[in-house]
Length: 161
Image (cartoon, rainbow, N blue to C red):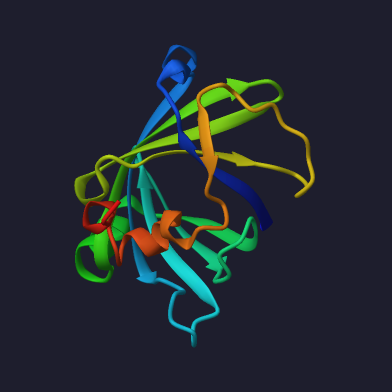
């Protein structure tokens, strides 16, 4: 993988729902959040439908980060989520929605992060042009609160909005 360029947006409305092409139920937790100043990376365990992986991302909270992801056995991932991950387990349904020449990932959170709805787009360049659908709200790419590793420590349900 190497480098991830991703932008995050809040959702304005549900007009995207008619265009969903795929849905995944996701559970993820962190072995290491990357939020401690001594940590250079976050290390995440994720189960998406019945596939599992371990993911390592550079710790900076920005649109461009190093990222490495590897498949692991489902049983191992389930055990790690139950016994090794700290903080809240992230639970969300991810919807894939094509728009223009890009594929959007829309996450509707549940559990401790119920009420949070975000769209993400992965780009090949930071300055890459993309179409902004009407259902997009404010961009939150530079707001650390909207990163999953932050949400395990401070779930959306604990925010004073």
